[in-house]
Image 1: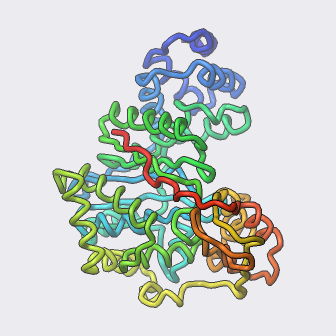
Image 2 (image 1 turned 90 degrees about the vertical axis):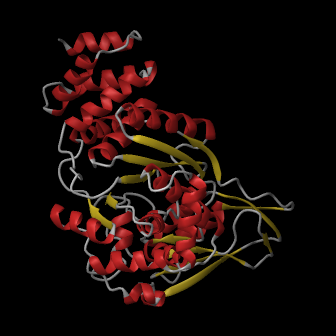
Image 3 (image 1 turned 180 degrees about the vertical axis):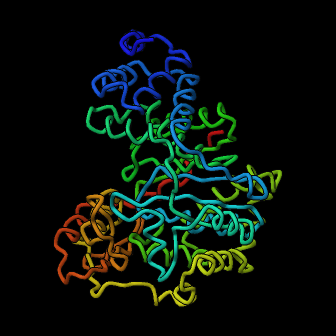
Length: 433
């Protein structure tokens, strides 16, 4: 078998065999296939696409290129969730305790963030003493005992994906649906879950800006999951403005805790309940979505869901008093209001610009080596559809800099105020199974 022939076959629109795809993945991972041939191959995929079967084969080959996590020692059906990323997306901290509170094991492997705010692990580290590195044995013990653990990814998961993504990043082949979907799903499948719920974002703050593109990506990932024996559901959710009202690390932990204590931040609460309910059905704890939703929502009202969050923090060595008294979470020295220049209604918020403003404050990383500042962030005071008067606060920045000019400018660019009231955006656009 020659890589040259595989490239030409895909270039001309042919369907690759399992053996041809495995030959490429194995050879490229081992360094036997050079970057220039891999570049030609990914460009051929970019233009010709892949069938559902080819994409599933590619994903499985990337899973097989490294270690996989064996969660069989955890009792019950394991369901994972994955978000394609957005601004103010703190759903994991709400959904994990919600699902655990009805007795379903949540074994969450997460990463660090490179972008506007930290990743799941960075946000959790806003809580003093909380350990996110643990042995596999401790991780499994925590899930079996408490139904919930969140830890850093261990082992060498899907190294082929890591190598291929770095190549795609510099060769203009990132935006290929089979390659994006395969990249995401290879890591999820290697992480050992039985079923997966995907939160696929759409809009200005999402990787996929249009609903059509988001639905196409969701279908691709659901097909991969189902083809590889993982029941998979995708929720298409809106990211045309930040989710909830808080952006930043400690800010987002605080808002997640408030939701579990019963605060009704409408979009954040609804999306969290939606995802948690689908997870509960895939775990076979409930036979219908409605039954799951009712039981999970009840656990917010009776305090069981918040107690699950407290238990997670205690079990991982965190200072639980910071959740009992949210004012103890890290907070930067200065609060700066960014105000409206005119009367009217908020008609649009560019979520990505809000995310960049948060990164300028120090909430995220521009490079891998940047330090996260857990205490900085952005609190939105107005969202789409809200009335506003000139001089009224649109957001409050929490900053260690008295005059964070770049962030202020970015927030002003993010908000559009018009004379006519607009409707709030639809939160959940579609469910794909």
